[in-house]
Length: 162
Image (cartoon, rainbow, N blue to C red; front, side, top):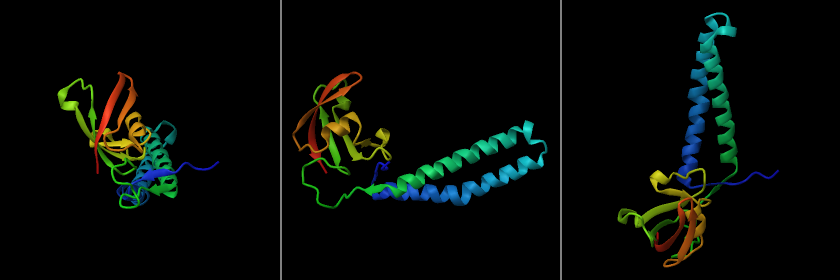
């Protein structure tokens, strides 16, 4: 089975690599010490400290495997490469205007289009697989797109692409 590529910015890749290093060098060692201390308390069959430490160990090892997979399949978004000016691509920062806003403050929104791994709408980063991200990807400035959302269809106009 072919692994799905993990789409990342250079910054996002660096964050994943830093998290992986932290888990391997710090968290694993700390957890190993917790397990040793818990074993020293005696009978592990009724030792909640030991159970908790083993659960944390499973989480750490699972996250390490997940990060290794993401890093090994990473495709870096080229934010300075061969992008067409005025066209929405991965890595583009886009200002969109809701043509029928419920609240005037929400009329214009600014997003950076990233892969799903880095998506954080509260930080202005939306996934290329999100409803808005998928609708605007590949579109030009002044294009109007319709996005189906749980609250109904919304029309957005692409105001600016950076």
